[in-house]
Length: 122
Image 1 (cartoon, rainbow, N blue to C red):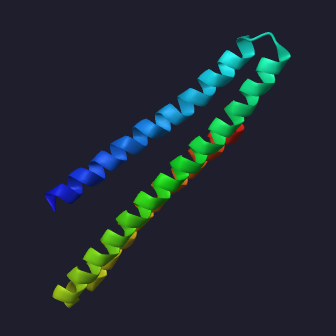
Image 2 (tube, rainbow, N blue to C red; image 1 turned 135 degrees about the vertical axis):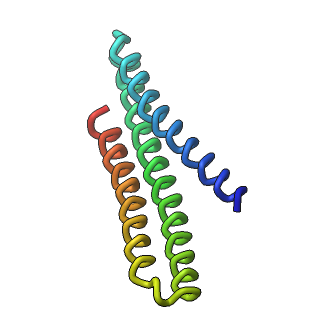
């Protein structure tokens, strides 16, 4: 169980670092593209910047959705085990489970907003 918690924390840190770098690298590429004066080089840099933005957005939302799904599955599974062990605590367990799933889903929606910002703003 401790290994699972460590791996989830490591994956979350990896995702945070990836989200940061996926936002910084396309911005740096577009800034470098603005500094060039030749039109062909600018067009090629803009194309690679657009492709980099698309890849960064796709990977960031994919990782967030995947990890969110794993977290929700663990949450629902453990709550079902808890309800099976103590049926009298069903209401409290269900309330806590739904609250946890809402927080996980909110984090995934934030990742979606960041992906949309990467595509359209940067």
